[in-house]
Amino acid sequence: MAVNVPASELEALQALPAQDLLAWAVERFHPHLKLACSFSAEDLVVLDMLTQLVEAPRVFTLDTGRLHQETYDLVDRVRERYGLEIEVYFPDFGAVERMVREHGMNLFYKSVELRKLCCRVRKVEPLKRALKGVKAWVTGLRREQSPTRAGLQKVEVDEAHGGLLKLNPLADWTREDVWRYVRERNLPYNALYDRGFKSIGCAPCTRPVGPNEPERAGRWWWESPDTKECGLHVRS
Image (cartoon, rainbow, N blue to C red; front, side, top):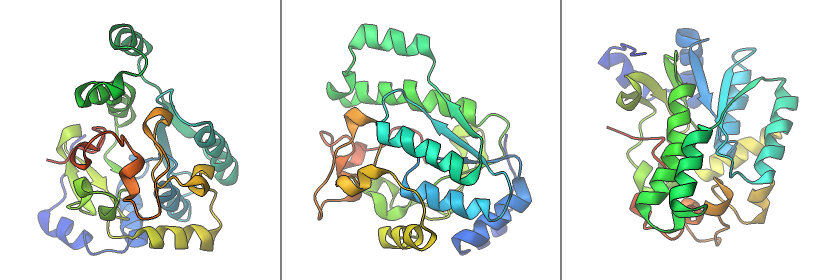
């Protein structure tokens, strides 16, 4: 659902603090506004901010079928804390069956192309369903997370999904900013963070990292840094 926002307004929005940008988005788009939540610390910061602005923010998550048990445990804790209905989207089972029959259970280790195929089936296609009828969506992405996100804007036109608006209110936050907020608000978080994980995705494709390694070094660690995206966040 394409959204028309004047270029001058988009430019002004880039300078807004996270809470103010979310307040603008809620006023402008709710209930046609959704938060994409993978239950990262960043996503939970944004979710917490949204719950202070609207009683029932719309939140969705993509269950690939290969997540850590710790992530599923966190989903239930978040549901209970905020009393939210979380929209869960699963991959098409037929597409998963065909992919696994042809390429194996762990195809993602074989090549970048097969890893991206797995991400497309398990994440990208379900995202398209999650965004139907939406005018704007929100993420917890930050520029600091990886080279592929260095040019991230707080407000972007998402041409890959029909021209709807994509908001990244934490784009200019540091990792320290995120965890300061988590501590101050006593937010629930994934137990894997306490075991050396800095970025958490599917279980076979995520591992702990050293204290001096980049945040996303544990994601698809067998690949080069410039390929470490799953296709959910395509920028034109």
